[in-house]
Image 1 (tube, rainbow, N blue to C red):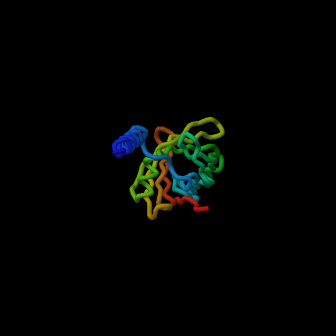
Image 2 (spheres, rainbow, N blue to C red; image 1 turned 90 degrees about the vertical axis):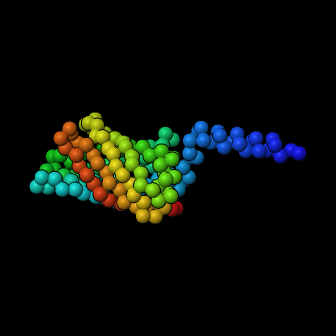
Image 3 (cartoon, rainbow, N blue to C red; image 1 turned 180 degrees about the vertical axis):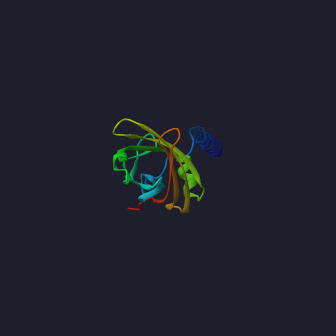
Length: 152
């Protein structure tokens, strides 16, 4: 009977997949859109706009960002943001589980901002997101907004 080699090959494939980690994220997770958001600061507001984040080969979502501080326009900044979300975390998100993520933003003055957050799905392709941006050792901005993975 030739069933034994087939079973051995199937078992080897399963072990290889477990050692490698989760399967790569599907193409539907290649881009994510985050709604513009804002938060209050002392006698003002900070609005954060991030265009569509695109997932690169290393698993980071990257995009430009713009932060506008009202009425303190001289604190406005722009830069690039990168958020790390593993394939395993994307799978958990698609199954309806809350995930946490980390990342960093670098503004045009080369100042680094640590980013961390939590995504809570409402459906497989959309949900709520909380983003914490550490501006300095004493200042942390917290933004609550929504996200969705476009289906085109």
